[in-house]
View 1 (spheres, rainbow, N blue to C red):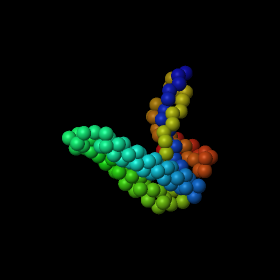
View 2 (view 1 turned 120 degrees about the vertical axis):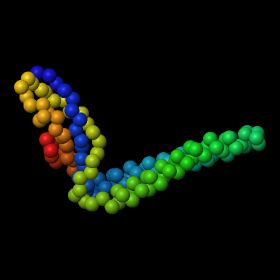
View 3 (view 1 turned 30 degrees about the vertical axis):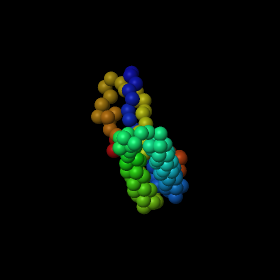
View 4 (view 1 turned 135 degrees about the vertical axis):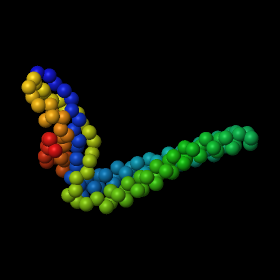
Length: 133
């Protein structure tokens, strides 16, 4: 007998509670990104104040790249919040992947072990384990 590791997909059933958790996480990411933008803006102003005039263009250029990345991230998070708000109660959404240890034996069909497996969770409680779908 031998043990092997297999990846399993965790899926969540959307409930009002799960939907609120998803939206809250996105809103937390949104606040964090806004704080990062504020911090970068503060650092930019400080760097410009401390630097010689001829260095301003390079300093602005360097900070602008980081600010643009954060602003794009804000747009993406706002889109994700909008998508999360439109989730239908009862639908399944894909979550993380987890690893499972399987015992395999000589003579056992490999195709059965190579089939995808899913764990279905509703409000933090496992509702179903699906194998070979």
